[in-house]
Image 1: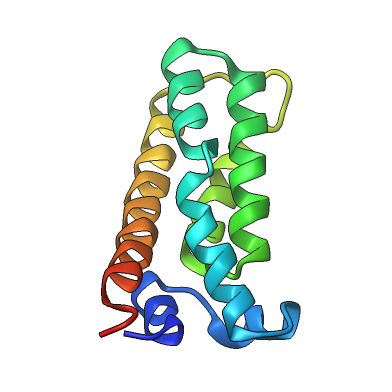
Image 2: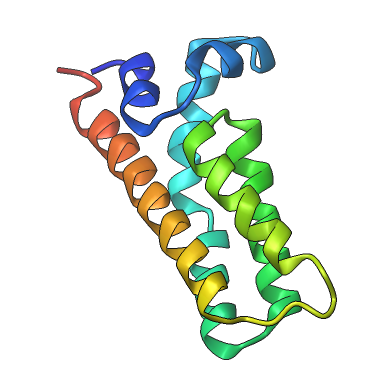
Length: 123
């Protein structure tokens, strides 16, 4: 499995990230480093606590990182959740939790693809 296959599996755009980063090795390095990013966990925690502002910040961070790495599917679902949380009078309701379920699905797809890439990289 190569990094391009990884992007295809996660619903990302390898072509876009290659326009942003200068080499495939750098794309690989940043994609693998994403596994250590705590934004998703922070988002889930803040939603559970009912803290809209902190949940917005975590969602916005996750959207930015996934967008910069061209994790397109994750970036899109996280962007929708970010906008739902943006207004200062937004509430964490059933709709927000539904949007979070899409982010969770896409996040799990993304990290699974990256982990498979790491495991199969040298094979």
